[in-house]
Length: 152
Image (cartoon, rainbow, N blue to C red):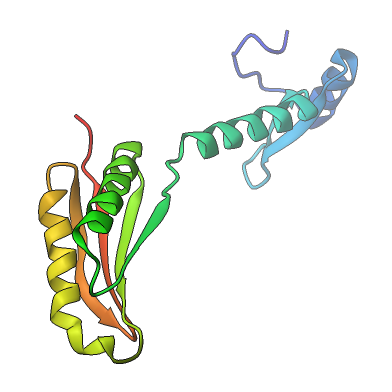
């Protein structure tokens, strides 16, 4: 009887007859083998199981969420603390942080202030996250990336 896990040697015609008798499908595994390797199974159930496995793998994959925090070069202490609290919450959730200083007009002259602000944020959050990308000027933005530390 088919389905007991033991491979059986039979002709393709016999296998086809057996599959029809059992109400199952005959699936070709390897065409090039001599004799060809076939398997008797319920093909729709097989496809269903494959989809289920793919969905399970997809659900187990970790999704990376990037949250943005925007500063100005002259951000005052209260606003900085407020945004730092949000950054702490984001890192604890497991999200990455894209912290950036946006320079408008002539405020680009304060590049050093923006870099100091971002480095201050990085040092204050070092127990929760690690710096993936140091502050870097891209156009009118100075960007720094932080990732949460792995939980043990």
